[in-house]
Length: 281
Ligand code: C2E
Ligand code: CA
Ligand code: CA
Image (tube, rainbow, N blue to C red; front, top):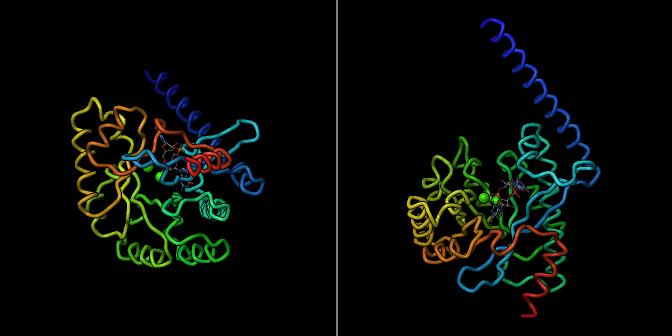
């Protein structure tokens, strides 16, 4: 038994060492990724539930790894966050999204009421310079007021709600709106909904996934949608993959949706096509 125990510990240590090695390797590669322009944004359409009309997009980060191909954000965003690299990459995301949005607006492809959303990590949001960084980016790359939306999760709040509210208010007065992302998955979603100046509530895809079979998920989505609407917020359902799911979230009063049923996240060029088609129709 003792022998086996020691083997297990050795195996465990070897496994941990391997993981640490893997993390360090990725971290080194991520440092280079920004310099070597290996990051890209893809765009997932947001669509009106009632009319099926395109209402904007969410920009999502991708890493084109030199040998591994596309690496998914689930694998590398935690490393960007723990290493602090998320600050520089986050700034790049903001600039790149604004440049792309400006292009679409200057070409006349971007409808007046459409919005482009970007994701901001809590670590970037809580930086003292965050408001100034955003405002100076908007000065360098002007876009139409009201066309940029920032998605945050409730974890931006950690510790100080007043500070979070103050940061958000400053940006709201510069024409930015906020969405509360992954709604329902945290500990205090409802209390933050009351205090934070957000315009949109995004119902997390984990509730939408089983909405057609799971009675509790059905009730939860319906309740979140009703509450959001009564609070005067736009309600967006994430992760809609089937027509049945779409019918249910429509009955529950969600205003917009994202999901594979309409489209996966697509390249900027493909999104341009989608925009020009939606103008033509
Ligand atoms: P999120 O913000 O909740 O983004 C939605 C995720 O759901 C995206 O995964 C999207 O591709 C995926 N998705 C959309 N529709 C469907 C669907 O119908 N079914 C399923 N199964 N999935 C769907 P992605 O792009 O892999 O991003 C994962 C997470 O990584 C994001 O979750 C977000 O937390 C983070 N992330 C992505 N891009 C950025 C970024 O630019 N900055 C920051 N800070 N985080 C990002
Ligand atoms: Ca998001
Ligand atoms: Ca989400």
